[in-house]
Length: 112
Image (cartoon, helix red, strand yellow):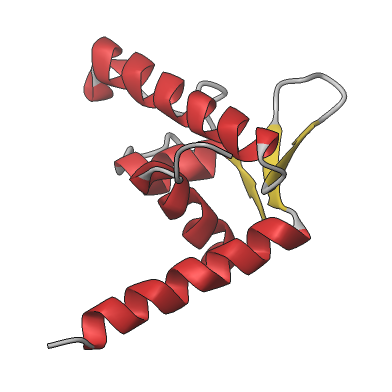
């Protein structure tokens, strides 16, 4: 498989495990980058507040990370009929890896 998984990929797996095995991409963006959402607004995020470069960079980083996780068989991507809403879900292998990451983090915190 080559390289290990990145910090962002680990965060994605942990978030999916903690918050439920299916999450919208906008929830991932909000949780991982701390972007406030805009309730009732079709655009979801205020790019003016976030900043165009930060928004584009964050979105691109998440897209690359999700593609790599999917290539490894750790997540699946689902789109609604319009293709507007994207949902990410853990596979069985991804859930097992996420549990391993949580356990590894717990063990590292317990070490003096």
